[in-house]
Image (cartoon, rainbow, N blue to C red; front, top):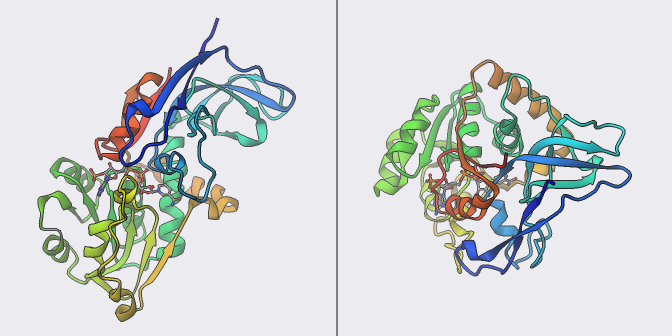
Length: 331
Ligand SMILES: NC(=O)c1ccc[n+]([C@@H]2O[C@H](COP(=O)([O-])OP(=O)(O)OC[C@H]3O[C@@H](n4cnc5c(N)ncnc54)[C@H](OP(=O)(O)O)[C@@H]3O)[C@@H](O)[C@H]2O)c1
């Protein structure tokens, strides 16, 4: 008999997330009703936004309540279907949460064709993080060949794709990441430079890597890094505010000291949430798939084995312990 294992929220963190904020519960797999599909989850994606889902602060999506299954996206296989569009064996992504089995409306599933590319990629460079990089850079950054694009958390799921798209679109790509190993990897992806912000010389190092200043900054971290990049932004440059991970566990936000740069340089600063482009997902999916298949979009995963590891994975992700897209292999 199959058993469903699910992580539920046991308590709201204040500050850093700990493994004790989650509780593992077991039950039989759910039975699909009319219009529903039962999915066996094979991969679970861990993402920084999950910190926001277990915060009691108002956000752009409703949070997880105590006792509810932790939210998250999975990639898996249909095992039973009461929906005309799905059959057993189909590979899908699902808003299934941190659990081994999920049953829900077929309309919530996305069928993916995992021939030729690993299924897990649909949670990363061919999924939500890839689409975030694509639309944020293309639509808000509006890059022109020859411009300089800087991206923070450059070795991560979104950052890796941003820099490689910037190169594919004719720009100079400069990453910011924590540590030499991550920076070496980022450079191996074809970025022109990568600055280790932990080396303690961010402003000078970034200035040297961006001799013509910064035209586009793809912001993933916020805090001191954002404040430093402000000092190098060009006239009529653009900042895509995609994420502010350095603030997610902070009791007080870092704030911004160099706000004046926006005025002086007429910088466009725009926040984004990937589902602002929901109707155009197919366009990004196709463009990213073509790049992966042509070997022009490389990608790295950080994989933990077993559903039991999910809380540890989220705790580590928020502390920068992941090296590449953080996943949990469920089967
Ligand atoms: N707006 C949207 O629709 C959307 C969609 C997806 C993701 N995002 C955001 O995009 C950002 C990146 O997400 P991701 O999935 O690609 O995660 P990720 O980069 O794969 O993992 C997070 C990385 O953030 C870095 N980090 C953690 N704490 C930091 C700190 N205090 N200062 C600087 N860097 C820190 C770490 O790398 P280092 O070791 O290099 O520090 C860590 O590996 C997050 O802020 C996320 O919330 C937004």
